[in-house]
Image (cartoon, rainbow, N blue to C red; front, side, top):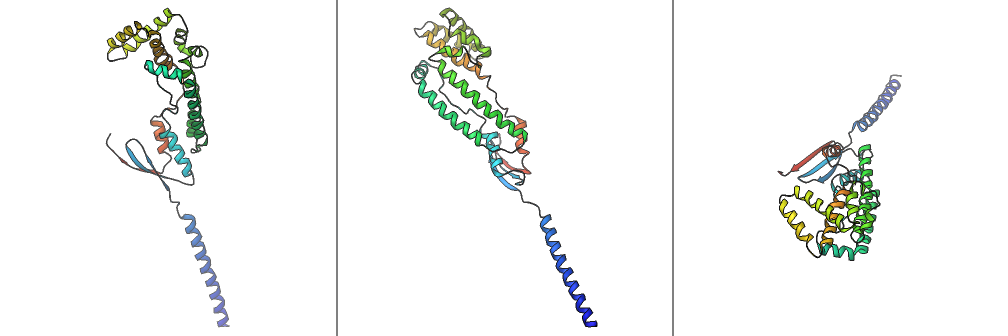
Length: 260
């Protein structure tokens, strides 16, 4: 009888030991912390490694947010600048080619933004939406601006002219009004220039040249309507808040920075 009792006790002890090992293993698995993933990124002065929680954000979302923050803040659509008579001649001659390239660049940029995955928080979703809106507005602005050099009448009725109607009216008016608005613009430009006399002297020389009307168009369309209407394009502010919102996506960031 003593032998049988001892055997039973041994079985119970063995089962308790196995149960204890199993529970310990399960508890150990539950308590094991998730290792953060590393995202390497570069800013103007720093090479950084950000450690993020992969259960909160995917690598694709982190990469997309970085691109939205740091790599997509500049001009998305590029069109020729018009500062000289040769520039004006080329844009009038090649308008259709320039607009075709603008359409192509816009379609590519639009697709990039639409397919961009960013972290699913309100701040960054709003920034993506604003960037998309900015691209649409810039596209419309560039189309009108390019078309205005051969045909200034396109400036008379569009959503960008707004407070820039003085320039739109001047380039579609008689010579007297054109010269008056051109002179006024040059006087305003001289106040913001380090050599104000040069700006006025240049105006007087161009006014007395045989190509005076083309010079007037360049100034009024490029520095007048162009700069004025450009202010109507909505853009996100790449400020300290955006910098802090990006850094907040990481558990910690290690950076090596050059001296500014």
